[in-house]
Length: 331
Image (cartoon, rainbow, N blue to C red; front, side, top):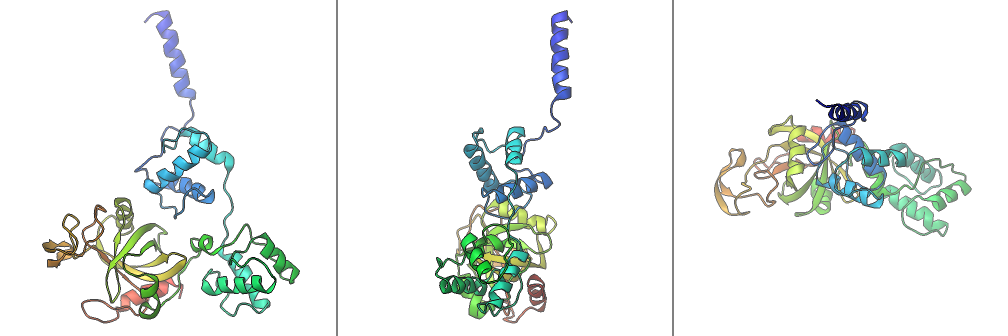
């Protein structure tokens, strides 16, 4: 090897040895704690509107591209050193917590506007109480606790120390439990067929997106994408299972205690929905193809139960599902 080549080799070797330790690029398909940290950062800065799952899917990529575009970076959806450094420089913003809502509820109760439980859940009663308080003092009635509403609480003798603006959709993801709502009188109206929702597994905190496609005694649901299906399957240990788990179903701004199984059944993804087919998933044999969402990597649908819902086969309330619902409600 000549002196010139040896010199170049030494320079290249030196660069490799002294280069930053970060070598991995987070991208579509990446998983783990690094992805979860990334997602939390994007959520806190308003680029990602879902829970941190630790799985880098399409929604995460879109959020990364939005961040890169706004901050003058190459908008390729790949999270390398430059993107990470930019995220770290901006830091993370503090999100409201359950304690913030408890503080608001306490203030409202002291002033006679709230007659509910001090539970830290930003439900309809809390929102309506805030609106009633705003009406009483001539503020814009939006149900949001911003600086003007906080100042009004202070003038009324109620000290509010919560951080940032508090509004119902922001606090949902920070609440630990869900509301126990009756399937027949409430949930069936809030969560009609074809409605979209988010499932949050109580034990792991992992979440995925669903659609209610069928069901009368309870909600028969499907995942929306292959990414959602992969997350759901991971929750059940990487395989389909008839085991029941306590979950939270987030529909718009409602957070509902529920229980679900991890076994898709009674359908075939490759066949037209509601056609007569043979060999339906879950050992259901021949019958109507109860698979409406196509291309999601799942054959058929899974069952989601709520307070007082019943099974289709027995038309009876399932005790194990109801026990899980109580867990999901913190009972």
